[in-house]
Amino acid sequence: MSSPGMRKLKIVITLCFIQFSIWFAKSESINWTGFRGAGNSKTTLKKLPIKWTPDEGILWKVDLSGFGQSSPVIWENHVYVTSTGGKNKESLFLDCYDLNSGKKFWTQKIESTEKVKEVTNMISQGAPTPVTGPDGVYVFFESGDLNAFNHDGKNLWNRKITREFGQFKGGHGVGSSLVGVPNGLILLVDHEGPSYLLCLDRKNGKTRWKTSRDPRVSWTTPLYIKHDNEEQIVISSNGLIDCYRLKDGKKIWWFDDIQRNTVASPSTDGNIIVAGSSYPKQSLALRLGGKGDITESHLEWRAKSVTCSFASPLLYKNVAYFINRSGTLQAQSIKDGSQLWEYKLPDGCWASPLGADNKVYLFCKNGKSIIIEASEKNVTVLSENEIFVKEGDKVYGYGVATKKFLLRTGKELICIGN
Image 1 (cartoon, rainbow, N blue to C red):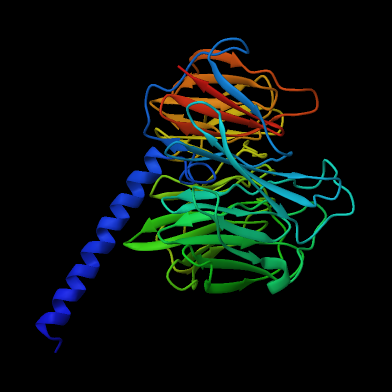
Image 2 (image 1 turned 90 degrees about the vertical axis):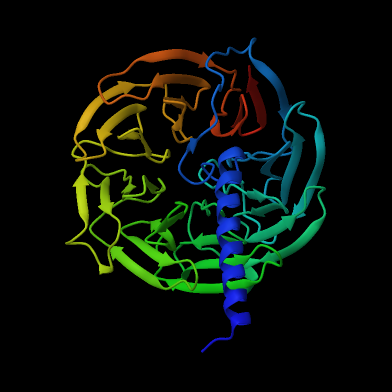
């Protein structure tokens, strides 16, 4: 039998964990802490901008230190964005700006561990999105460099992943973003060589666990979820969807009847996981709660005509939103995957659609944005907006703050506000 003192200690530890989990969830909803915010491209913030032009509604605009394809992340009044520089991507940059004024607080320049022969449009350039939190910001580059800084720009720790586990193999670089979990970070490296899922401690960068995976090239980012009182990591990656326990990296379930799910990241509404594919009849939904091989047991639906390009699917207000390569927005029923309606956007989207305040925000590559009502019945366009995008550039991602958007092109960061 445990002593009264031990029972008391267990209760205190449990309460502390619950309190931290509540705080973590709340901070994720207020701040934009990682790729797709908290991983699902949704926010509880209201009164976001609904009208802007290249001349109106732009609060500030800055040139970045280099060129990059990651999204900005936000913690309180700090905005972080990464980029790379040089013809061999020999320089890696982390810029920190004031959210309200656009004033640069600081820039960190990191020498790249691995250099490419020549930068081309077909190779990722600063593609992985950072993670931020109360202690600072954590950045990962396709060179294998993984660094942590506090909010004043002081280096806390760094690791060279390729020196530890081998160089990344593949023709297009690495695009998976870091994923924030309570007190930790998740990193997926799926490439033509030995692949793996890595869990690290935020405080010191040390490995908590490393789970090996078969070689499998993709650019998707894992999804952190809680299901049946268990923290889990779901991955949709080039012919496979699988799920791991956060505490030890052990595989819980897998589904292998899917193709070309190589770019779009998975989404959830708490009951199902939806994965997007660039092949017809491959975008699908899986019911959560399975164990082992769920290929024959947990498929909820396949969308007949949907395809998914760079943007990840959004699950919002009983609708699953997909954007195909040509820029068509396709709305499917979350219940059975049947198509509700479709709408042609002004251009394709690299950025995933955003669900906020009963609206869906769509940020096209050419700088045009469409805002619609979140609806199962039809398309109601609330506004059409635009920012100026330089020739040859595009909108890659966004961040969300109170009454503000931060749109990121390859070379600029643009703050839109009321």
